[in-house]
Image 1 (cartoon, rainbow, N blue to C red):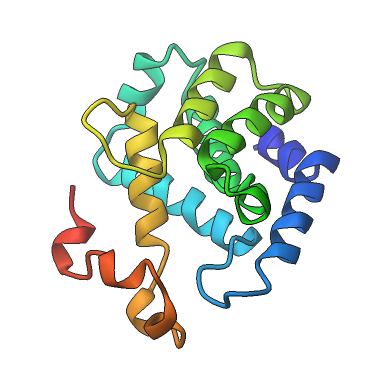
Image 2: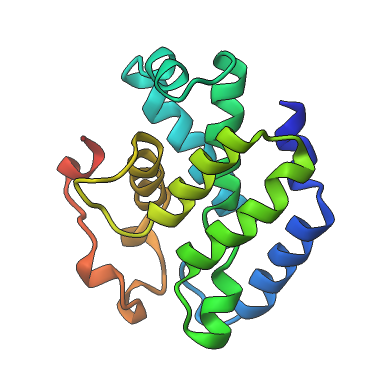
Length: 174
């Protein structure tokens, strides 16, 4: 996954992740660090594989093959919260801002225009579930939710998201 490696080593990506780390100092819950991005990328890919949807995803999006599909899914996971620092600073929605940042970073890692559109839209959509979501946007949304073990977090009593999060086993299905 050479393009994903280029992405996570990109100077812009590293700078935005540094800004996330600085802004994530408080609150202690729901950090938006590299580990969270990696978890979301892996879970999104697992969701696709578990339902035997990789071939569908590749064909539906006119991707060049399974490796391209995997790279697109991983890139979306690594970029989904890239704009979180801006939300902390200004209140702007991190998903829409992150989609804008993704459009700037992805070509630097040799993602083509079609792949940039697929990834950026998924980043834009990941925050809220809707019936009009793309395949990848929906998987990214679910992966983001599944990546958090909220009930085990020592800060869950202070967390504004905890009381609204589905904590039943049904949240693991779709």
